[in-house]
Amino acid sequence: MIEKLSRHISRDIKKSDPALSVSHEVLEYAIGIRLNFIATISLTCMFGALTGKFLETITAMTVFIIVRKFSGGYHMKSLTLCAIVSSILFGVIPFIPIYGEYVFYLTFISSLIFLWFSPNIMEDLNPSKWDPYLKPISTMIVMSNFLINSPILALAFFAQAILIIPWKGGEST
Image (cartoon, rainbow, N blue to C red; front, side, top):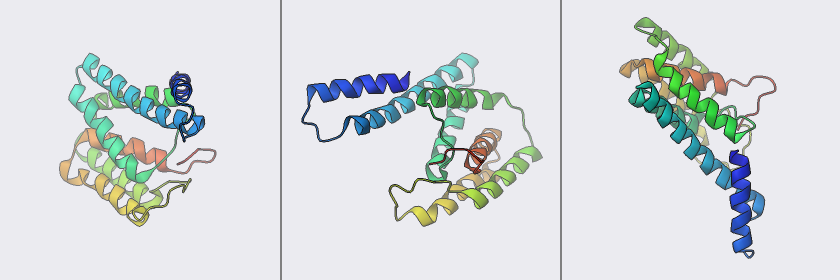
């Protein structure tokens, strides 16, 4: 759905300005990424409002997005599926009961995974001066939960930790 919409929008943009220097494919990709972001935020807000856990759901989404920016990880083949699955994940996290030492254990396990595997960025299309700092930044973000002690953060970080493990056959970027 998102892919089809981004294709349609990019085609219309190219039609209205054929001299546009960017290719149809690049335009379609950029629009698709933005539509995915908007769809994920919209669906997550909807799930949070419908379940009465709006703040917790938004918190899960926000920390997941922040740590993912520095750690990379698995990407789904479909932007639509990504938006739906991500939103469901963020909506479910507030309902998973973990308390006390389990928050510590989950944060500890996530920290180890981030120390070991982050960043999991297979396509090095745009090397950056920040590349050497991605591992310590993403790991410190996760380790901040040792001070915060939030079940929501522990679960969101753990979900992202699973996505940076280089599983065989997974597509990483």
